[in-house]
Image 1 (cartoon, one colour):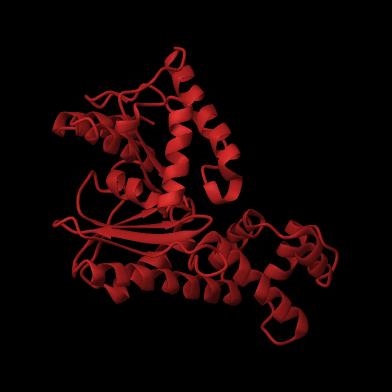
Image 2: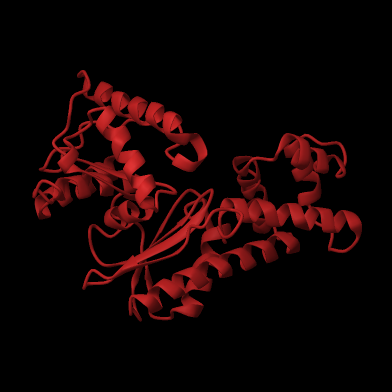
Length: 306
């Protein structure tokens, strides 16, 4: 992206989650995305004036150092004009066009981050699937699995999820699930891939699926409420991010209701720019070229055209 808001090219590759793919996998994926972005411009890859890395699960100094070393090894930008932070920061920068407020991510995992006008920040969630990720695709998928085994035992209500889950998992009967978990190791992405089955069942009125979505969205809304309290915002602008957050009304509507029950004066808004352009805007700030009003208008026009 140029300083006047012209997007030259966007490249995609595999996962950008350091904890999922490791340093070598991340280096390969970042390099592939960088090359693809320049290929979209029709030019050979070259070093930019600045780069900002907004990466999932990057929350410690050692993680930031690892990602920065990857950027330096790929010669993406000068070391002094290269910064690394979590993906929430770029989602907020893009979602509210650099303004203060709160962003929550509901994708494979979940987390929430806010910044007030004084620059004070707070983060809640983002602890991974073992400890947190409330309201995420993983959370919905896992809750659905629990509902299915409870229904199988007779401890829980019957649900259409029992049949659609079995088909999706490729198991003939529910006891085979133990092997899938214990021997094969049911991966986080596989569990998260079950979430659309839950939201679809909820949209068609399955009572168990409706309860799952309501419980999961209420748990995520608690993180949003906590961030609002910590940054001292009674009427914050809140922007959703992540695939699940934009998957449709079966999830989005109960989530918005849950947030507004906890923060009645909140304004839930659609993102101005996607996170990747938020990262580009933050990169420009590193070289004292933050987008002005004209550049932001150009970026919004680019998003509208896509």
